[in-house]
Length: 440
Image (tube, rainbow, N blue to C red; front, top):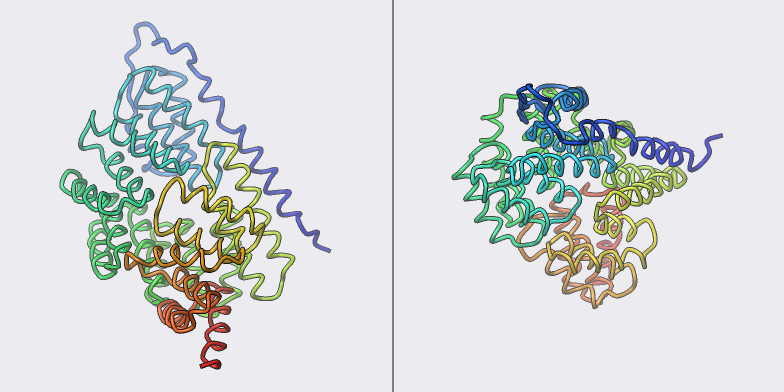
């Protein structure tokens, strides 16, 4: 008989082991002295895009044992660790990245590669004020740093400064037009409700992409945009193109599973999402898989996935990641509702975005405070961003607050926009809307 929680135990053990991995490279060349008579051979950041990420990181580690004064190499290694954390769901890589960037700055103070890397690290840890500060410092050294320009847009978006983010995207497009900037430019448009404009920019970016990684990345962004609008056929076509370029690209695998679930192909969706969480146990896919199990009536398996979110959150916080938004969203529906509200309030105090407004609204609602939740739900939908979950949350809050007409409007809008936005949420939206229609 399967023991509930066994998967959680194994995941925690594996993640704990990962926290010790790779540390030997940071210890190499600790005294910082250049080997007498030897020219330092610098490594370009392009090495990370040249093939297997783990192999590239290992090669950098070996290189830096021989060339500990290569500040570019240290900055590139830091970026490699950030990317490993992102792709593997392993936050233990972040302290390693921080040490690598510090080493780069110790060898060459103020170098823009390390400053841009620290900006990317801060953004990955959800320290968006820090990300903006480091991006600005990097751009003061090199106004054309693509990574710093892109991270600056990310930081402004995640701080809720959408007008500034739009200006930053224009600046970045002028200085360094390319796929990293194009995709961010598209997202700023999407947040303002300009779906057609976002799609047009992403299609141009995809046409310009040639490297498999770029094709996978941009095609996945197009898939997500289509899925958000309920166009599952187009979404699956985009995800297929992404996976044709890189058959292990996790965001495309996750997106495909969500689109399959929305089309009623539950067994395929479960298999696909399971593959994702085995390789990258992040809160989004863990909750997604849990909801697929719960919608199918298997509460034990669902509970295991929700418990894994708590395990990831604990490890993330131990490694300097601000996980309050992840905690608020997962706990509101599947955990400690009081903890969800504390986390949502803390995140709202740090940054005021449509996503944090939605999280706070929903956390207040599940704690029985619908009237207090209403202003935040309205703010979450105020920019024109077309997100079915936001509309569903607003409709349910309005329903609880006794605003039947508004509730019918927003619940119907959520289901019209993306009828399969969530295995559980869509079901609840239909149930609530049916009751409201019957009461008219």
